[in-house]
Image 1: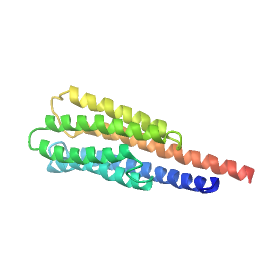
Image 2: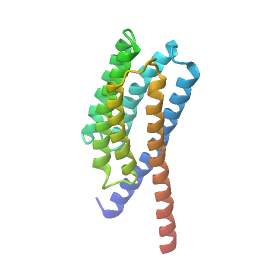
Image 3: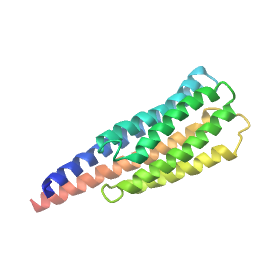
Image 4: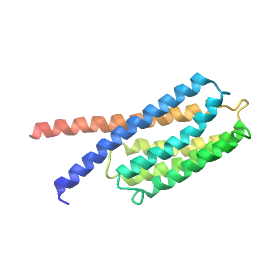
Length: 193
């Protein structure tokens, strides 16, 4: 592969990441709005709690496939399995108690955060904005520990909304960072050309 072809592949993947991060941010914002709108004890709250890790699994599959496949992106492949298992575990935990749901979410946040951290570190040399994904993965693991360690007086979906909102911010920062980097690169090329 020539240097020019490598540049085109890298540019395509970076455009994909920018779009992917914007989509992830938009979903998280929509999820948080829906969680606040429906209230803590609704049946829809249960659906949202199952949907959140299921969405994470689907998003990781699509991103991995757009970024060289699941075999090349083992942290994402593992994250898919962890997130799908979490969706099933949340569905079961909803039959028990919200405290069990939060414990499941905590375990998932730790594992998926560490896997996201691994993905970001692997991408660090090739793509911009990975510092935000590193922070996001680390913060997710810490938040998971918080879910595990604390038992809210009134456990509800609201406990998870802060986690989702912070995740949205990290994805948005990454998307904006890539957008600004792309603008700067175009400006440099225009000056040289």
